[in-house]
Amino acid sequence: MNLSLSFTFISVLISPTFSVSYKENAGKCKINPDSQDWPEWPPIVTNEVGDLILPVGEDKDREIDIDIDQIVFISCARNGEFVDGVLGKIDGLTTVYAKCLGDTSFEITNDDTDDVLEMGFKELGCEAQPLDSNEIIGTCGPNNEGSEIVIGFDILAAQEGTETAVLTVCYDTSTSVNIWSRHSLWDEINAKDHGNDSPFFNPDDYFDFDVNHFYTMAMQKETIAGIVRSDDLADKYVGDFDSGLFLARGHLAPNADFIFYSWMDATYHFVNVAPQWNIFNSGNWMYFENGCRDFAIARQLDLVVYTGTHGVCQLEDVDGEMVDIFLYDGDRLPVPRYYWKILFDPQAGAGVAVIGVNNPHLTTLPPDYIICPALTDHPVLDNIYHPEDIKKGYMWACRVEDLAAAVDNVPQLPDMELLL
Image 1 (cartoon, rainbow, N blue to C red):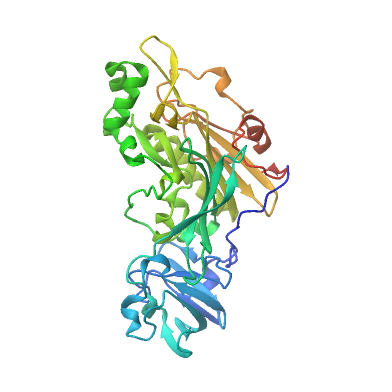
Image 2: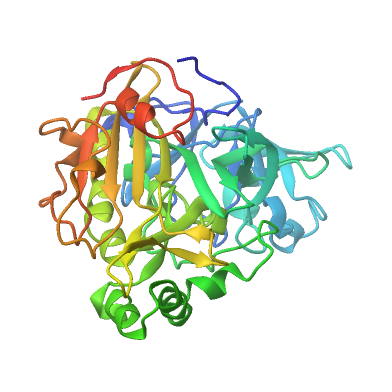
């Protein structure tokens, strides 16, 4: 298999080998996200080619390190200007060039006035949290039926396009199917923000129907009742919130894989979700994704992660026949039969795939549901206590090439060793 390099890897600018000794490093700007130097609405900080700059450390002992004289972009992206125009110093600007002077001080160049200013990072907060943007950059999918959509930040308002990618999705707008989502999972995830309030999911301009309406529990029950031709069966299939037996807006690229609140919020687009039974979403799938982060941290890996869907979930109708479940218009917004994820380490040329069955109403797992040979005791599943629990989501790991042979939604990837 040949690797298509049409996507952008988000570069890691800080060495993953840093430990507590990073505070001893001299000759840097050091910005502590948990100190008074951190603005209420922090800007997006990237290098000169638009790669996000990552913090080092963990939890309440973390900082962003920028080398002396390094040039960075500091941007409020799509959500307006710097707070109060920084007292008129940089009115009307959403992005500035900044050169690290040391500590938390930067030399700011205002291209509009040729002024050169010295400012602290605290002064460079935004009027509100920076908002992400998205754009279609091409086609994707097995027969190019999908739109390849980049979601990220427009750090240069004078240019068109999303210069800083947070995630990329391959979405078939005609069938409302997420084919896959791709993002980077850094071992620096240990330094992420906690306690973010989840925003509403954004349909953008990719749907010709009210997609949020068809995700509501009441509409799910009505739609499924029509498919299985029984209100009683629909009441069995879609329960109350506490039962977990309803279809959640299941993230493909999960918000918890990102570091700062604005990056997390960039995952809240309907093109990055698919219908996922909540008992699976908050059960084995959640424990697995927690385990992926632990896996990256423990091995100091920066991974490229693909997450996708495959097939259509089936439920028994009033005549005892298994029927496909779609949430809109009979053949759109399908409930996936499977969720899959590939963890790829490009440095080592190694990867592993994991598959989960999205149907808590199965009483036994049909043999043909095992679509690729299972690996025994792979460590990526260590965080799941009962991977064979169908209600919480039956899950197993296999080699990437075996998943690709069974699932045409898997993108073209290079030959790779098994990631352990």
